[in-house]
Amino acid sequence: MATATLTADGQQPVKGSGRVLILLDGSGPSLAALQAAAEIAVTRNAEVLGIFVEEVNLLRSAGYGFAREVGGSSGLVRPLQIDVLESRTRMLAEQARCSLEQVMTSHGLVQALKLCRGRVVEEVLNLVGPEDLVVMGRVGWSGIPGARLGSTARVLVRQAPGDVLLWSEPHPRRQNRVVILLNHDQGANHRAVQVGAALARNNHQPLTVLIRADASGDQAVTGGLLAYLQGEGVGAAKVRWLPMGSAESVVRVIREEGATQLVVSRQSSLLAEQGADVLLIETNLPVTVTS
Image (cartoon, rainbow, N blue to C red; front, top):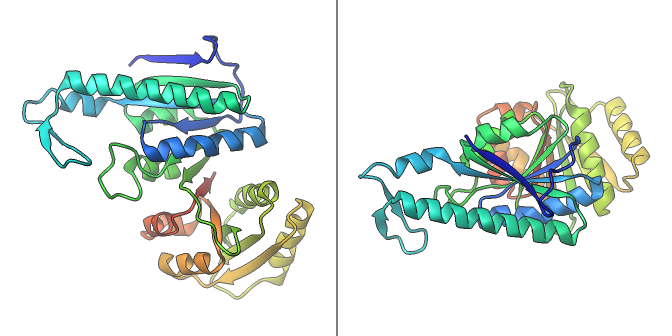
C-alpha cells in the first residue's frame, strides 16, 4: 500500500490534534462537504487533511474479463478496463488536490492531501484520531445510483473514534434550529450537548434538545441542561421529552422542530436499533455523530 502526503507548498504538514479530515472522491457530495469542512476548520483553528483513496477492490475487479460498468447518465454497459479506471482515478485525485487547495487557501487554512490505495474505511480509520472530526458526503461517486446513504458513511458513523459529520446541503426552514437527540440513561450525552451548543452559538441558531426516555420528563435534568446551554452562550434553547418510539416518530419530531442540523451520540440507542438508517436518511440534514 502506497501513501503520500502533500501540502500546498510541498512541505510536510505540521502534526497536531483536533484536525478536520475531509473525504474526497470527486463526487458532488464530497465537494459540497469541502466548503463545510473549511468553515468548521476556521472556527476551530484546525488543520485540514484531505483523504483520497484509490479503492483497491475496484481496481482488482477490472482485472476480470467479465467485469462491466454502467454509465451513470448514459446507462450504457461497457467493459471495466484497468487502464481507463486508473486514468480516471488519477484525474479524480488531481481534481481533489486542486479543490482542496483552492478552498482551504481561500480560508487561510493549513491543509494537506493524503493519497492512499486500499479499502476506504480501513484507510480512514488508520488516519483518524479521537480528537479529529471526519467530514464526508452521504454518498460517493461509486455508490449505488439513487442511494441516499453510502456504505462508507454507514460504517464510519459507527466505528470512527471521533466525531463524524455527514454533510448535505441544509434547506432553509422557518425555525432554523439545531437539534440534539439524547438518551436519558446514557453517559455520552455531554459530548453531543457540547457539540450542539457550539453549533448553535457559532451559527446564531436556536437549539432544541430531544430526550428519549421511558418515563416522563425529569425537571432536574431539564433545568441542568438549560443552565448549561445558557452558560455556553446559547440564547434560545428548549428541552423536549419523547417516548421511546420508532425512528420514524423521531424523524417527525425533528421536522416539527424545523431542524437544519442534527447532533446525535454514537451511543444512542436509536443508532443501535434497526431504525438507524431511517434517522440518517430521512432527516436529510447535516448530521454530526459524536463520540
